[in-house]
Amino acid sequence: MNNITISGNLYSDVQMKELPNGTSCAEFGIAVNKKVGDKKDVSFFRVKAYGFTAKQCGEMKKGDSVLVSGELKQERWEKDGKKMEKVVIVAFTVGMIKTQKNNVEETPF
Image (cartoon, rainbow, N blue to C red; front, side):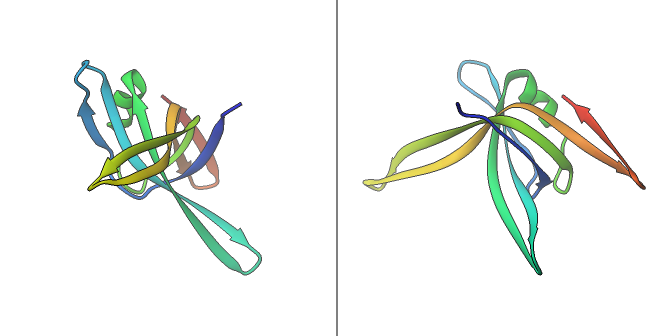
């Protein structure tokens, strides 16, 4: 089983591109804040979305709060003869979280 759900804030604007097969692709980064005792810890994740979900992500901008559900994918490539790899989240759903005073409202895409 390979499922992940995280909520956080975009630390970068969404980068949109069109793949050679015509599919839309959105890439962005999410910062997830966590408090452990007296210390704050921040984790950074890269996210990719495709198709309809990607098009909806185009409305988001740096600083927006979001909820992302998807799966982890390990990407591998070679650069200057050196093998590289990274893990990204491939999003199935992305929802913007709007905060209004004491109420939290989720807007799913």
